[in-house]
Image (tube, rainbow, N blue to C red; front, side):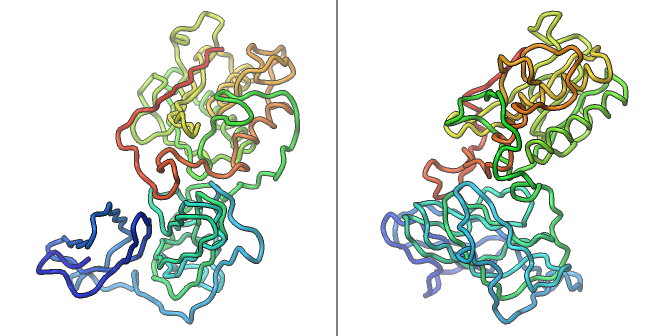
Length: 400
């Protein structure tokens, strides 16, 4: 790889053997904003950009200033337990400054790999990028790569598609403002086993393979509350807090929308509406619907929705309806157990909190299960890949 002019230099950036997937970090100059890639063998090539250096015309600032350090080990999972497949771990900052660290320069080694797969380094407690940092092609492999990921106040996050040990050795950092954290920490305080037990069911699949959201990414929702009062909106905030606590999933209020539909607009992961005209396709007794699209091969849920009638009385009746439909949106189905909030009809008096079975089900679809091996990645998990404009292959719509 070299600036986009002239012939290739007499040096290599990456050396491969047949049928091998391998990565390397490269710093190259640009010519007119372009660079060239030369390969001695036919190959697919993926280039993921992590940043750039400013030129002489940039203003003077300490932001982006590199600080070299005597190398030190920031993380070594071999001293505790490996990162589980489809899970994430945070490094913390260790002996790095507690503020003013915008990115780190480090060596990332994965070892004792369970199979072929990848590990992605990114700012801890932020949305998972669609890139990989180091790739494994078999079990029992040890392989390293140089990384320069952004950092948050919690350091660097590591997402692994496979069970593996990881070692991070830091050589320095770039000064600047740490990335703002937008996702709850791994597991988000959820217990390692269900806090309660009881009757529960999944909206998609069964206990062996069921649908859930990727807890490594936030769920940004928008609301159409134009037909109701601010008190209705406040009750929704309370219900969101309740399901976030029960699942460990991180919800972000994306504000209001004018859309009155069950498909969220661009930029939102979910839509919640109070419909003054009732529930389309539902009878007069239907108080709401909830659900999501999902990827059939991984059961990862996305594009969630909740729609409730605008005329549901404030207080306990609305609270039960919102909790019920939000649980549908994150992956719970109906149960034939009247003692649970996921019973198909309302209760008298209305339930205002999730019951034991509900909470066990919400634990199973929550952050305690780790990340979902996203369908945005190839089936082998070796190299992340965006689905582009593909539509989901399955959809669930529950009317209750």
